[in-house]
Length: 88
Image (cartoon, rainbow, N blue to C red; front, side, top):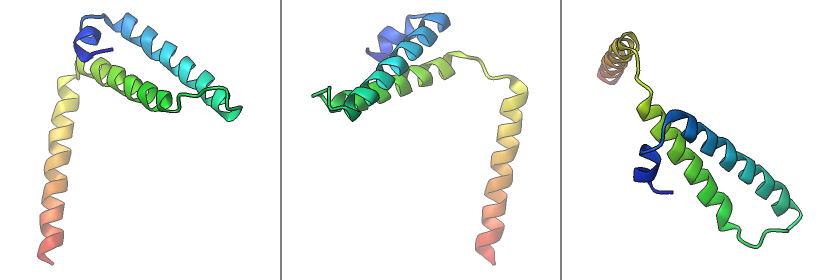
């Protein structure tokens, strides 16, 4: 499924798709152990699809302003610590 198609869906539909693809992946993993599946590339595409769905889902969920401020402060602290560490 293309990213544009996923972005048109609402949150509940995306979650449903993630659950469905995880079930397919689980079935495929057990089938592969018994060598039932001939298409070994299918696991890779399912994993990528799940990752794409979760990424778009995380993009659509708004991050609270407080959390953004904490992340910016944390990043500044890490950069400052790296500068101090490289000077020594």
